Length: 180
Ligand code: IMP
Ligand code: MG
Figure 1: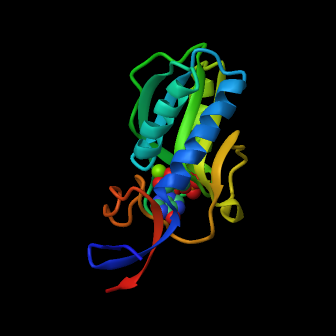
Figure 2: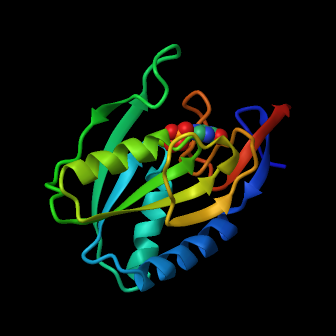
């Protein structure tokens, strides 16, 4: 079991599994109906997944443009589902086919908010790819077109995902199981 920052980490999805799944997802996306794709990566959690997925998309014959957006939920006690835009996209999204990328689809609030925002701005289509799906926690009406893996109801870290700003650098997805 890997030890990082004096914590034991149980590996849920290894870097080999992630690489293989990225290739499969890219091939599925290439067979889909998105044209002239604008990839939109939701910061910060999805940046590692997005970085690997765009290279898998290239290998699958696609040439996406890449954009970033950052949204966050308000602090505890405020209305669930209300999010704030921390950093906006730079491109005009009108008429574009967007591939929205997030690390985890949990309540669905983040992806729903971002998808609605892009559609309001006149995007032609907004497909969703989530690396991990926590289906048991859904609250918003949102559908992921592509899912990497079903995720157990555990707090996961690595491959871009953090716990208190730590562990984004891990090349695998894991769960912190205890102190050394
Ligand atoms: P949603 O809006 O509830 O779907 O939240 C999804 C967001 O919560 C993801 O983009 C992650 O940033 C974060 N998140 C949810 N579960 C985890 C986890 O297990 N580890 C790290 N971040 C998580
Ligand atoms: Mg996130």
